Image (tube, rainbow, N blue to C red; front, side, top):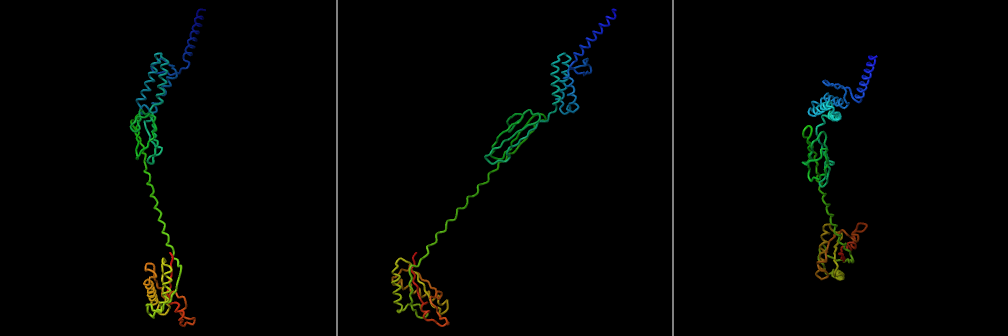
Length: 328
């Protein structure tokens, strides 16, 4: 009877101990470690173990050994703290070790510079954008410290200028640059040539306001005036004197007897004789009187008949001097 009671009591104790063990291990992970009597840990510690091991297998212990060792050491410190019964502190260490292991070997520091307009005209502005990447400890743009995340800057160079950026961090110091080209504006086009001056107005056409034809009978092959011509010349003098302010033009004509060249010269001599006579008699001063011979070129009557015979009357009509009064 006593043995039975003892056996039952032992079974109750075992059940209570088993229940206590199960309750105490709730939320923990079985992860025995060599040299430790603890088999169950809060899950954050074995998770840190796995993160550090994954980093090692990825070769990060060689890529960034210092940072890897920091994560490994923090993980080990978490276990030591756990064994010292500072559970919450150990859990926080394990969480930090996990984060460090997963963030190992960030990309090296780098930078880039760009311009919104890489070519501008003199007097214009452009925006410089300085961007960084990787693990950056410090950054400078054109010798001035800026945020490690980068910055922007508006510039207005007067000549072509190169802007430089520098970042320092993981992997050492890196530089970047961008050149803004300042183009000189093209010279203004030359002014158009001035328009040519308008041509001078044409001189007013001389207008014949009166005309007189006289017949002077020069001796053959002569240009001397004879006494028989006095009456005709008197008409010329009276006619010219009626227009004291007008210009006087004399035209000399011959008939067709003789060569054309001979008649041209003869008409010039005869009309000149009449001109000199009018000047000598005071009918007109020589500044306003002119004379020109036309030879046989302007007949006013036929020199021959229809049958081709000589026409004395027609020839007499053609041997003439015309006096023209010109109004300007």
